[in-house]
Image (cartoon, rainbow, N blue to C red; front, side, top):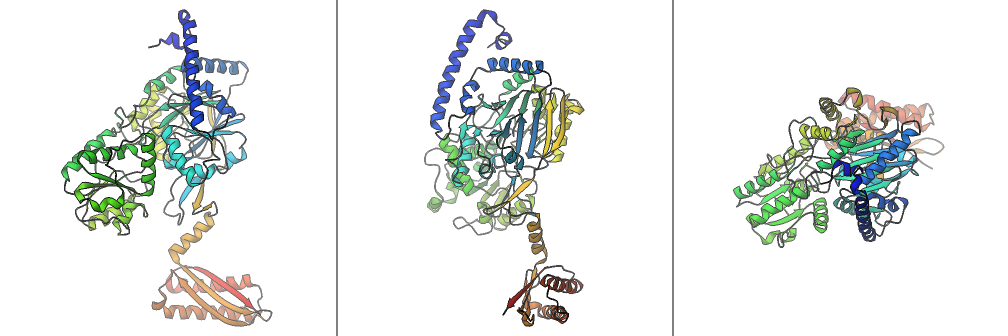
Length: 628
């Protein structure tokens, strides 16, 4: 093991040998980087990629260079200040994206989406507003992605069409991103670079080191962002799992090294900051699956989990193989993720274990396991369609055992309860307890990060406001001064330096609604109309006037949708028609030729009548046609 003196370049006896070894190490890694470039032909020799040679220097030599660089900046006068601009991911779970800016360089961490709330009728998903990045597109050097969950990569196919810069991530993360780029025909136009844990990349004024971290998806990374003002550590989504299903435990030694040299700020995951203790290891779920499989040897087993939780799927497959069962993977996103993970070597499926859903009929119930999407009660997910008899190939049977290997995301509780009730009504046994562990750190793990890094400033991220407040409380207990803890909001411009950390401005932020192929064409006004239609229905009034004379030729006719059942409300609609007749006659008697005013009179008259009679306020849409 190296001594501290050797790391700092102070071991005079070994200087010559150490430098030579460093050169050999650098040259060896440079050759490996060249091979990586051959594997990713889309990447051209840009300035950032030419600088990749520096990224493979031994860490300790780079730290000395960073320190000398900082000393030169300080000697020049004013302390450098970095801008941190969260464009999403705060006050909510999802849509994570944060920009880091210094002079003419902007690097962006993550680019995720969020799912629509109940009042966003017809909306498929929500992506962040990146107007600020578009306005400063010449400064943007690239997207650095911490892991492959939708709330961190889901918006990339939409944002890259506006801001076409390289994307950096670990192997599995880039593999999942490429699935999305293929769907949107962006593979040729988007540069990708696979980065290994422990490796660094240069983006303008920033150097970003990827550090091994544990989460509910493999290949997650924390980021050490080396800036002219100091080191900023972004944890990404994380937990401390000493016995992960795949790969190594988190690189706590590297965090300790960074903490010893000095960390300017820690941006820590806050999702589970309100939970005490530690998050259980993912391996504990494997033992639970084994017990369930042993207890239900005569039943067909259906397991619903997150498509991206590759480690969870691995443990389900392990239990299925142990008990001689065939596995069917159902659900589009589940099939895509498992396919990618299998190709890249992140999941081990024994030969003959996985079968196509078409082969399900060739096996008895006790010989099969289904792994499916729908653990959050999504209406179109595979499990929801099975529960409501809409799935074309799988029907729920009374002896089925259905395992929910997840916890409901806040806001999804009702949808999950609905699916559970439907499954129970069909006689299936639903198991909901002890089959899930979180992928996020609880309080003791967050404390560990503060203890290792000793940050000067704390900037909690990733969570609703209550989670950020809980993270602030943890930082206080770990010795971070109250004035050095900042709760940011989306759109805030935070300036941070050696002696300052404050909000100095605000940029445009928020959510852009995606509806089908339309991006941003549905706004608050359209949503308000949809809500009104959903709550109150619509009444359309149609009448035809003769051109020039304005004589009434036909109508007014009334068409109703979503207001009342027409066949049972003929009297009401007849009265409504008389009210409209009177309003139209009054307008024509006064020789009113302004159709806008005529429509308003019709709308007001009918609205008053319906409110008095029904205490309802439907959308009223008058249509006036003109013929010669």
